[in-house]
Length: 116
Image 1 (cartoon, rainbow, N blue to C red):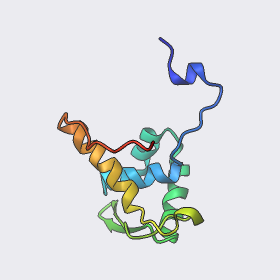
Image 2: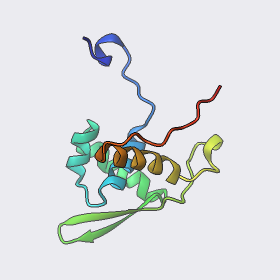
Image 3: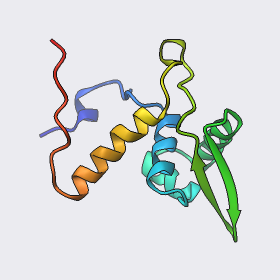
Image 4: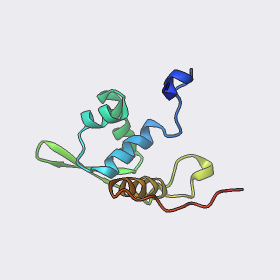
């Protein structure tokens, strides 16, 4: 059986690297940049730039704890794109947090009605 990447000449995804960094911080507020880079599949330097972008835009705060950073998210900050600007990023974080919890407990996530 072939993987997705074998069947497609494009490797686009629905979530940007910025969204993925935000999700990794939500999963572990003390995550290291190098660990995020490995999980997401981008360079540590790219993660560092994204964390700076998110910090400057008000999506996260950094606190130095010893030699590490602890991040806190501003989940009430709105998405940046005009069509979603009235929605908080909490919606994205909650969706993936519920998915993570369901997977940890081997429970199906809450059923979402289909759009017909």
